Length: 164
Image: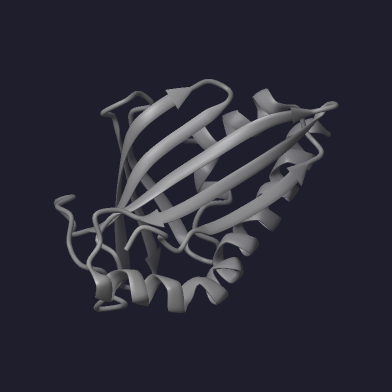
């Protein structure tokens, strides 16, 4: 399959690019918007190619672990990473929530200056995925705005607070 399904999220934030970049890369700010409606714990954040972002999302007695490996970091323009579900030891595992979910997603986030505002574009694409994983991802794309959208609402509020 050559044409992989691609989830695209685009938002314009009323904040300068450097501040939006900081909200995506500062371990103190990330938990305030990433993983809405759960407790987000950053275990490690190494903002460099080959660096890891290890994040745990907790609700009650449950935890969901994510392992991100950065492949490209160009401040304040672009972040590229390989995004996976992981176990508590940060080993890549199949998604505990969807059996055929892609084990790895290629994530690209760009930050573009737009007259004092910032245009953010995020893409998610299955990476080295099986046909079943690609089909699962394609079928789930319609609901992805719910989670990412809730996070973007929190990010908008955070950016307003930081500029107040």
